[in-house]
Image (cartoon, rainbow, N blue to C red):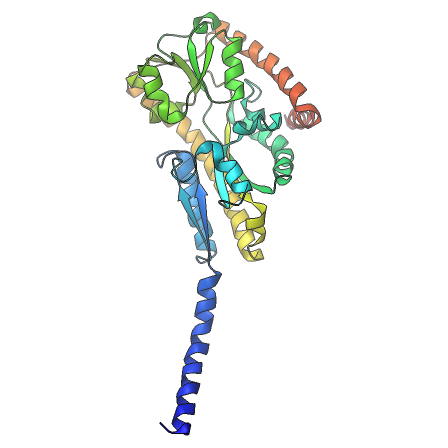
Length: 332
């Protein structure tokens, strides 16, 4: 090969490399996030989060690709928040009240009858969102959005018509508020994770539980109990968080796409939750669960417990809790 031919070949090779360089840079620029969630694929929270991931992917032309790992398949519920904080994963979902031991403000949505319908629950969220977001920021976390579960009711193997009907029943609880409620009702609080609910009932480990119509329907509660009281005690929320370090590593257009998708997911999720409440109650009834509303006696007793727990919560939460309560009362 002559020197001239060699030079031409070299230039041609360089030209091809230069032409493909932008493609390589673009390929390297795409960011992939793993996002663990605690609940199964059919749960509306998971459906909503998958749509959030799809919205982000579409808005960024695939430059941010979020893979959702549902049902605790990647990281267990109890470890999701710390895994995001430590940078093991960039984002995740968890029920907010799991963090109550860190700071009582995280269980504001689990105080009985503080907010017992969707309108009040939204007002309470707006009253507490900024303070909760600031608390997460101290740990290097950013709050993206939060969506409530349907209102919590009481499941049992017998009618619950007055507070004494709960006395000495072994009640499945999932956070400090449900545990305190069980104690004040003279029930026996028992910690049981969602996947273990059917076994816990069938083995006699629990006799009753406080949870949503959704959890009852998803766990096929009719296989192991007979009654559901739609007490609408509180509307606990799941929240989606992201590592501030991971978020800051995105360029500004991608950050904006994430925030806009989060706003959309929050509104969509609240609408889904409302519909889920109606649908799940129907499913319970269709499968033989006796669905009832609280009797006046039961409602009064639960409201009294709620007032006591509100006072206890404000005392534990201190100035932050008092500010949330003031914001909430002003909004109402």
